[in-house]
Image (cartoon, rainbow, N blue to C red; front, top):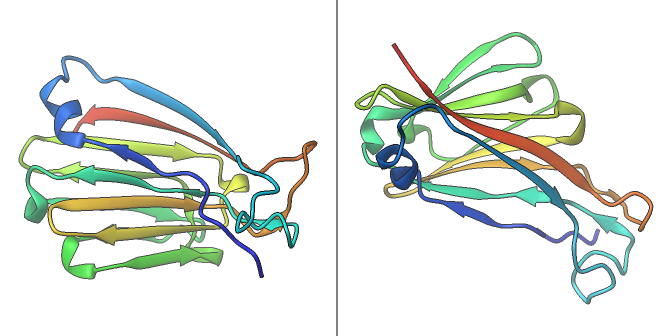
Amino acid sequence: MGMKNIVALSTDLLDVLRNLLVPIFIGEFVHQKGRGEVGSGAETGLVCLRVHPTFKLLHPIESFVSFTSIDGSKHEVWPESGEQVYEGNLLLSGEWMLIDKCHGLGLVNRFNVNEVFKCLIHWGTGTFNLELWSENRPVSKQSPPWISHVYEVIEIP
């Protein structure tokens, strides 16, 4: 099964926090690139789009992720959880929030759940990944893989 992680995005959450005067919105639309290149998955006709943002954390032990799954269950994921994958009924219901309790801020990531097949949460040393993966599927110029998502910084009371 041919698959390539096509998109990588790196964001410094510290810069967002330092420059925050009011909640801000960042919108991104990500689409597949490199069709036909060796290793792109195009040789098999199957492609998986992966949105892979990495965030640096000011207070790693005081940060966690909060979300509700499609099945309605509520989750809090802390750094000691390591890497976690959510799919099927546990797939996030279109929104998750990275919370920094020390600053009272949350970075909300909203996405179209119909475009996402699985979500991955990974904690590193002072870093954090919130990943969105599309399903492996055939690709063409008429229907490229697509994941749309938006970030918003909010105050947590």
